Image (cartoon, rainbow, N blue to C red; front, side, top):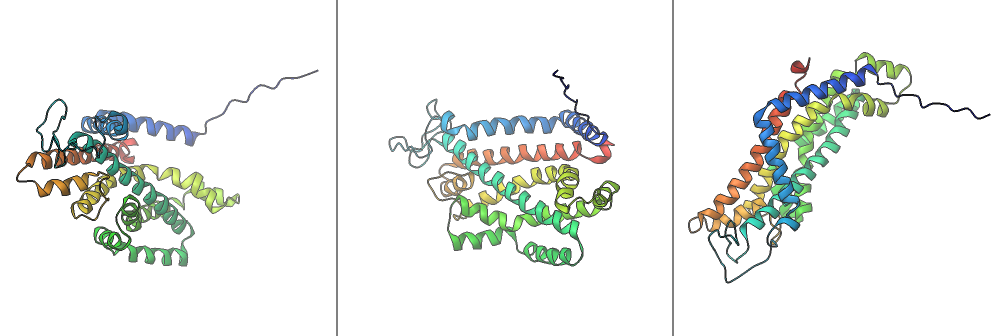
Length: 298
């Protein structure tokens, strides 16, 4: 005789239910922030245009037409052409793509390194925490942009070199934030209960501590991305960013600065693109900061 056993329904713990409720409330608060919603819409459009550039762009970023140099905007070239007849609108799409790839990759590396070092240091504590934080202080003492300039000059230009140069000192802020959050959580009852049952430090960090510090990390990450875009633009303007012909917003600002008097519209288009990208992310970060404020969600 064969007996059938029904599937046991998954029971959501009070902590999981409370966490889900907080995220729903945060989403509602974010949707009420008009600037944040507008920023999210603009960023979505920019992401589609940037990462869909190989398909959506009317021309390749390196397609030159020497018979159409410095052309004014026309239906064929929506924002005109540059010094060698390349379509400015297409290059802005590809340049935005490059800048977003750099900034998102740098932020991913910063989060991975910063969360790992900060969580382990804060959880273990003692002499290990002291040594790690003194090393963090040493790294934090280096100016990020100046160190990036020195590193780029040493290892050469390129996307990988730029990502390395921006990541190598930027993780310390995430590390310090993570450590501070871990120190405030490691004495909580649920952490001590897990330790009393023999849970390992890594398991406690992964399942208890990191999920509780996600909101401030999200806000910090969103507000940090514009700084990487500005840094990429600054290095590109100095001529030590990404190698041409690969376009980036910084590289295009550098090119436009040479012809700013004769063709100011070229600089204007690039500057507006950078401003719109940075403002949209900044509005999203500000909206997330308000939406994830624990005092507002209480």
